Each structure stands twice: as C-alpha cells, then as structure tokens.
Length: 255
Image (cartoon, rainbow, N blue to C red; front, top):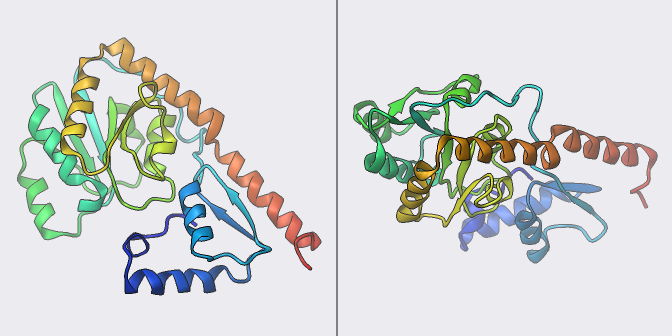
C-alpha cells in the first residue's frame, strides 16, 4: 500500500466504494505491506484484511543511498526546494506563501514538478518570487543546490520519496505532520515538523531555519543523512520482500 488516495480520507460514497475495491484487491494476499502505520490501522479499522493475512510496515520504498549520496554543503544563497506535482494538496499554495514572505536575492525558492493546472502554470511562470524548473528526471543537481527541502504537503502519502531523497542527500527538511511525511524527520534535529494546512506555521518554520547559521543548517542535514542510513536504506525493503517471497514459495503461509 503506497498511500490510500484522497477518496479514502473523506467519508461518503467514494470512500465506501474505494474500501470495497481495496478489500477485493488484497483478498488473495498472504502478506500485505504498508508504508506507514496509519494506513495499516485504517485497513484494520474497516475490516479490509482477511484474518490470516500477515502485515508488515516498511520504511516506504526506502532510498538508494548509493544514488543519493551525501552532498557537499554550500554557503552563500539559501535555496528552498519544492518537488512534487504542482497541486493544492501537495502544499504549493503554502510554499508560495513562504516565498512571498522571504524571497530575495539571497533566498531563492525553487520548484520542480509537472504542472497540469493552467491556473498554477500561469502563476509559476509569472511569479518573480519563485523559480519554476518544470518536471525533472534527475533531481540530484537540485538537491545539491538546495539548502532546505520545504514540503508542506497534506496529500495522503504512503511515504514521500522526495523527503527521503533530500534527507539522504544531507539536506534539512520542513514537512507537514501527516502520515508518510512525519516519519521521515526528527523535529528540531533533522528539520521541522509543521501542522497541516497551516500557512503561518510554514512561514515560522522557514524563518526559524533562516535564523540558523550555516554550520547549524549543515549539522541538521547530516543528522538527516544518518537517519536515512539507519532507518530508510532501500536494502531493508528489498530484504523484507525477499523474505515474504521465500515464505510464499515454501508454502509457509498456506493452510
């Protein structure tokens, strides 16, 4: 389960339909993997798992620590980076609010990601407070230039890959306190956790980061890298998959 999707979060007809479809989808599974505990609790609360099914919570998809290496820190201009599909639920309005508060010659707000909404596309192309780079296949050069990854998303994530990649690159993160995001950081140590849909909280977190000196910012990024190595190495995920495949092949989970 890589995230349940927006229809599941809102009670109503679509939620009932989606729950039923999920039940059908996992009906034959010996083991169901989840990327956060909140999604697992939702499945159990709504009786979406067969009684004998095993469940395991993974650290998302993990992060490739060889591909996303610890990048050198840089002094000078501060770059806040947003990477996602440009949509309201991903927190783009909150990112733009912070940009309008703090953007200057020395504080840059970069945005990478596809933008299908003509309204947002027009805003990004004409807003002097942000730099819109469009969709990017390889984000490593943007992580290298980044000073802080600002991701106020309240979209129903499984586990946010971009938060893992940024932290693995040694970059502090600011993220919303919601499943799939909060697990990726230690508040006040590797970044700052903020309430969801709270523009003032985003602005205050950005201000708090800007008040740190370069050494403190770099240290926060280093702690983030250590957390990724300790908890989110993709090898952990691969080993869990291989373990369950071996059990299925041996018939261990069969009646």
